[in-house]
Length: 104
View 1 (cartoon, rainbow, N blue to C red):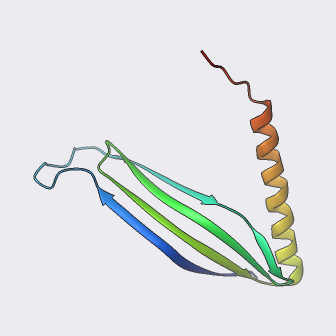
View 2: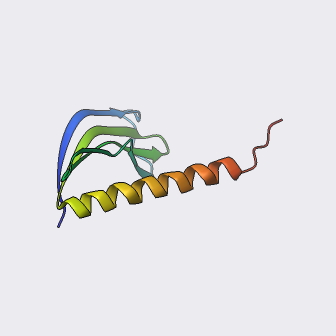
C-alpha cells in the first residue's frame, strides 16, 4: 500500500470581484492539478512536485497551491508507479507532436 504525504510550499489567492459588487448568480469553477515531475528518491520513496489551481468564470478569484507529494511504499509499487508515469508522459508528448497546428 502506498502512503502519501503532502507539503504545501506556496499558497496564493486573489479576489478579482469587487467587495461591493454582488457575486454573479452562476460561476463556473475549473480545477487543475499538474504533477511537475516524479523522481525516485530511494527504492521505496518518490517525490512529486505539483501545482494545483482553481479558476473561476466569470473571473471572480484565483487560487494556486504549490507543493510536493512524497510517496512511500514497497519497492515494487513505487517502481511501477514511476514506470507508469513515464509511459503516460511519453504518450502525452507523442500525442502533442502529432496534433496539427494551425497558424494565421
